Structure formats: C-alpha cells, structure tokens
Length: 275
Ligand SMILES: NC(=O)c1ccc[n+]([C@@H]2O[C@H](COP(=O)([O-])OP(=O)(O)OC[C@H]3O[C@@H](n4cnc5c(N)ncnc54)[C@H](OP(=O)(O)O)[C@@H]3O)[C@@H](O)[C@H]2O)c1
Image (spheres, rainbow, N blue to C red):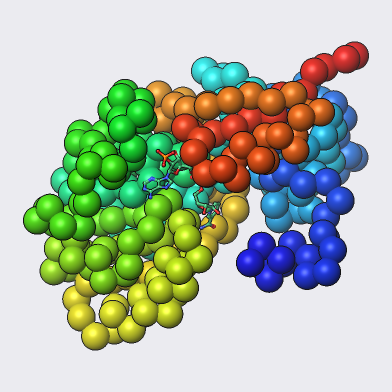
C-alpha cells in the first residue's frame, strides 16, 4: 500500500526516509527571509523529498516553523505529522465543536495521543480507547474516560458519540456507525487496510444516504496547521508523549519497533551533534 501511495512502486523513490525533523538551522540560502542560522525549528519534509533520518537535511523554508521554546528538540521532532493528522481529522473532517462527546480509537499511539489532547483543547468530553497497560498514560494526558479494548467493546456498550476518530485499531464500519449519534461524524486517519477501504468506499455512501457522516482524512502537511499546533504546545494544551528514543545508527530497529504496532506515543531518532 505504501508503494501505491507514491513511495515508489518498484524501488524506493527517496533514498533517505523520515518526514519529521527538529533542529538548528546551520545556513540559509540567499533569498530566505523567514529564518537565519541558529534558529531552532521543526517541520515536516514529506512534501519536499523526505530525508529526515540524517544529521543534516536541506528543506524549503515553508516546511519549517520556529520550535516552541518550552519543548525539547526530541519532543518537537515527535510533533509535525502525527499532530497535524490528528488536527485535520478532528477539526477539518470531523468539524469538532465544544461540548461534544468525542471518542478516540487507538488513543495510545503516535496519532492518538495528539488526537486525545487536541480534542480536549477544543473543549470536548474525550473518551479514549486503548489497552490495559496504557490506560494510566492516556488518563494523564487528559482523557475524561478510558475504555480498555481488551475488556470492553465500545461499539456494543450502548454509549453514543458525536465524533469518533479512528487513529488505530479495527472495527467494521457498521460497528463505528452503531456508536455514533444520529448526526455523528466518523473520521478514519489510520488503522487496518480493511478499515481504510471501508471508510473510503462505504463512508461516502453512508454519508449520502443518512445524517451521519463517515469517511477518511488524508494528511495534508502545511505550515498553517503546524503553526496552529505550535500554539497548542506553547499554551501547554498539548504535550508530546515519547515512548522510546533510538540513535540514528539504529533507525532500522526503530522502524521494526514501530511496525510491531504497540508504541506508546511516538518513537524518536536522536542525532549526536559532533561539531
Ligand atoms: N491519515 C494519514 O494521513 C496518516 C498519517 C500518518 C499515519 N497514519 C496512519 O495512522 C495509523 C496510526 O499511526 P500511529 O503513528 O498512531 O501508530 P502507532 O503509534 O504505531 O500506534 C500504535 C498504538 O496503536 C494502539 N492499537 C493497536 N491496535 C489497537 C486496537 N485494536 N485498539 C486500540 N488501540 C490499538 C497500540 O496500543 P496497544 O499496544 O495497547 O494495542 C499502540 O499504542 C497508522 O496506520 C498510520 O499508517 C495516517
């Protein structure tokens, strides 16, 4: 699927992978107006060739935003893609409103930990779904209610939600529909292939024939949304959750760890500064 999504059908399109970055600007081009050397920045290189798994990366200025001063480089590197995916899913596709009952499925992962906090920042009542060992962490980032998916199926407990964001995990689309209020919205940002195909193919159909809205949200990296996220970080409304850090030489181990599917928050690659 990743190959179909434009990462290269026969061989990888990009030699150096990795999208999110945080670091200090070494040097700027002649026409660069927004930044100068020494500025501390973070950003997403997905629209400009990737290359984040490296000591140095060259990017256009629009991929970068000044790093919030109240978080570390490691925390900042955990933010761009996952937080913007969560923000766009909740705000743009989900049309989140204060006072709503919002459920985050897969709340303990990279996208889910941001989604739970961003949903709280919009003044909603947040229910987070995760496994037993991650309940305490999810509570600590502000979830009002936590459902342990190993003990309870939220699609069968009689509760209804105004907005469900599926960040990870899997239920058939009919199960998510059952857990929605009559005018509720379901947004899928990640999860299994079956979940993705159902939300892309059946979601528009359900949305056309009833009052519920169901579908997926594809990530569109942009500076405006990264600035929005930066402001949430500066206001301490959102705090990155970092599971593990791997040195750059162990990036393959980091990917293997992530692909096992049980990260608690984000996994970060650290780079030693040798100069
Ligand atoms: N829409 C987009 O444009 C976009 C952009 C980036 C990423 N994504 C996708 O979004 C998805 C999530 O990304 P991520 O970075 O958040 O992944 P992740 O960090 O790897 O997610 C791992 C987390 O998911 C939880 N989880 C796994 N199965 C679950 C289940 N059945 N119910 C509830 N929680 C479950 C795990 O908890 P346990 O260990 O407790 O099970 C773990 O905490 C991926 O599929 C990724 O490809 C989409």
